[in-house]
Length: 157
Picture 1 (spheres, rainbow, N blue to C red):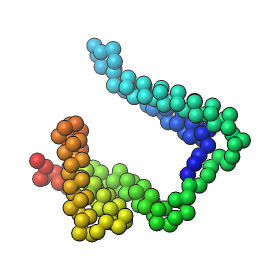
Picture 2: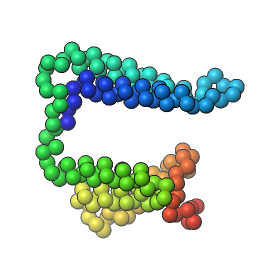
Picture 3: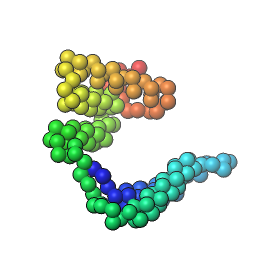
């Protein structure tokens, strides 16, 4: 789907402004000039600049064609189903992330997506489990991101 740059720029500008408003609630760290809002604030400012550039470019070309053009994939039912499964899977994971944990959610999401894409069922579970474990290890051990264990809390290593 192709959207006119005015629409994309407006959405990105709203996102940048929402981020800038939200980071005002971040606490200051005593004794430091740069707090936790500095990096998100910088990124939101850059995003706002890009949004304004898109708005200007889109406004100049507003008569060049339709504002919304459907991409060819939107006319293909299997591809629409894959996109819908991806969105539904991510929504499911967002809703049950804490209860089920990263590994369980990751295996379920990857398993459903791989199976829907036609990967042989004998390969789906080992591949989904392997990918979820590698991603978990990278984030949990190397980057020290505290991912929830959920159902696997008793067996967490």
